Image (cartoon, helix red, strand yellow):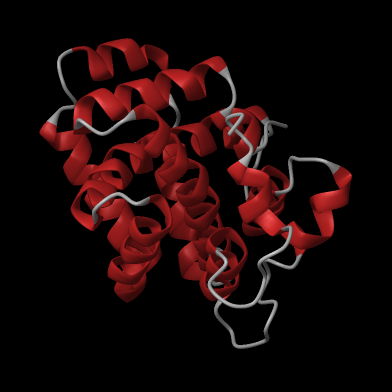
Length: 211
């Protein structure tokens, strides 16, 4: 099963970075930084959402239909003439659903960490969200996932697809501080928003693209 970090470091991930960079007019290195931090954040938020029956049903329905993976078949065409406005509207809807009221805070944190302005971060996320959903949809199909437990396992496996020494850090995504908000915990590890300055996803992702 492919992990999210493997996706970002794959040929398809490189194509995604190049295409998003070209579409938004942002440098590739900064675009890569934003995507490498944002993808685990978005997946962590989805993992929190599937903990409720309605959330699991909604995601399963989306991954089984509109976001089954077809968008991945022609990324060159998607980016070739500029990303279609409908794709960006879809991305905005996805972000609003999985991040809710925390979306501005997430965009601001990614902006501060990457050095890119928040509006550009928002543009990147709008393009990346439908592609991430398509990747999840394809993984759901390939792994015959058909219920909430399967979705939870799939998301956990994709978040955990990395060296064993980092596995315990990923597993602690599930509400590490007991406050009921997995998104806070993911943000803490990815963005270093509290005292976790050593190790964690931030250190791992920082070297993902050889920097």
